[in-house]
Length: 263
Image (cartoon, rainbow, N blue to C red):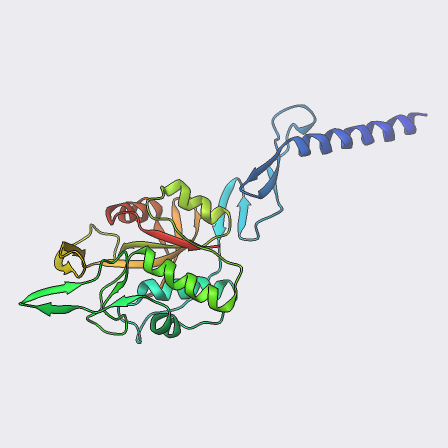
């Protein structure tokens, strides 16, 4: 009889544990994790344990969250000296399993518009509409997110991929971090060394004749994770590196908060 009572008690305790676990499941954008709190009652003395269920790129160790999305390392040099944006997009597309090269993307999918000098006035494109120049050339400049979204959409339409490119420009730090939580790498525009932007070059926009003041230390990278106060970045000039998160997002905001993703 005593053995039966002990077994019954253990079964009841296990049932309490299961119910407690079910009531303490956190879901963040489809990422489920179970939390066992060791503060009181039958859980007294237990340490915190996390059971990862949904996102293979997200780990929780000793209460610290780390997200790392293993995008391919794709370097822009030597062929694309000013092709950081399209190279970063290529890395993201490769991550999703599409075997496209940076040169194919630059030559056949990226909207480009050349510079032209008229009466000693330099004319070029609106970087929100086309890449300024040619990324294969040292005289090429850059584009912001919309032409990269267009390049992605054109490629996706051609291959029939079940993906959607999204312009995230203007997104907050938290909104971009949530993309990582969902498993989506993000192409982010920052400066080469995360210093203040340098604006010492300009041209007139072809269609409007308005003056565009161009940042000359602009760079685009793939943000593919974070841990603590660091962010993981695939830099098309350096490969996989980490940056201080505050410095990274300060540079992102200083340049005007340009970003895009594919998901």
